[in-house]
Length: 153
Image (cartoon, rainbow, N blue to C red; front, side, top):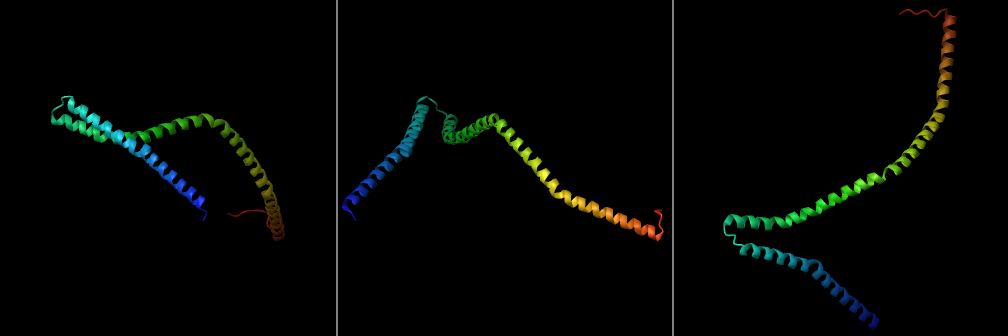
């Protein structure tokens, strides 16, 4: 291989490693340490505020334990609020396209009925002709047998 290309590839790898380290520090470690510092400051503040009984400390520690969970619950809540807002905006925008779609579907329905009627009409006419022919032959046969159309039920 080319030594210059190898050097460039090594430099590119070093740049990617440096970028990953910076990203790790900026996106993971810095927020973690900042949150830990904030919780520690709240604990120190609660300790110096002259709260002395065990019940108050239990309530404070429960609050500190539930705080991350409450923060995590805010994400789905924000997502639901955003989706609701988007849905209301969509309902405001949808009537015009739905009216166009309804018009197109109405045209398709009319065309389908017209084509279906045209396709079925010859069959209906053939059945009607056959039924008329059968009735005529039956009537001629009844006349030849001497039946006058009297029914004996």
